[in-house]
Image 1 (tube, rainbow, N blue to C red):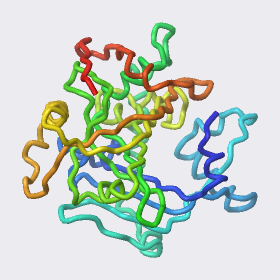
Image 2: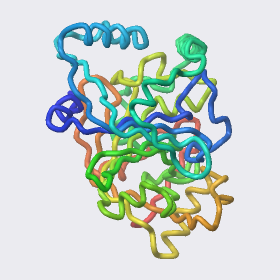
Image 3: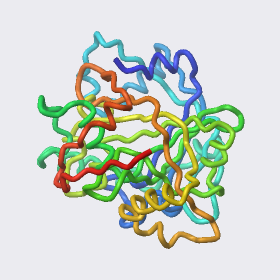
Length: 325
């Protein structure tokens, strides 16, 4: 049902990315764009390995269940496996001037500031979410999978873009994006990047990338709305989509104009980003789509089905536009 475990058994190398923009109940980025350097991001690269029976697994389960109580009730017949990330490369972006590399030793030796306050705030946010109406309602019979995918993409403003590094290792980055101005969904994925970005350097050697968006990201940005209806992000009803393909720099004036209009409409601050950095639009040329928003696993979805769908209105204009490719 979830290919993640099977993939990790074949190749344990992986990257996990965390964004300050995702932290509900803690200090957030406020009105700062998620791609802005001052909106912190942390990526941990390394190997994700299965935790064997014993004290380590008992400790891991206790930690998981304390933060995600719903996990303790997940069906045993699904064969859940406990994995652990063994860090090798840790990079944090939290200010202008680029990233900072942290050694695993430094990482584990540090203590988070006021961790109890952060956890209590997050738990309070979850409790509040149970009392509110959910954005992540189970898929209705009237909404097809492609419609649900298009709805999620149009509602989101940022996601995680994954590449391969010079060493051939997976790595991921928080990136703002747009598929069109609010109410003018195209389904296309546009980014505003600079050659100073490590993601562009990675893609210059291997342009195969994946871009992931979760309903949890969308709900966290809407402070008056619940976080996946109180469900954890891994719950199947908390939708997530991964689009894979090639990252392409746009060259023609018409393509650049169309992409910039879409990006600036959703991220006005991009207009004022430093001209010396030479930001330019890039597009993800979608080749495959993985989408889950309900029980039963991912359903096959072709790229043509995705683009043919009209996203179901979510308090947005019901207009959609088709941009020739």
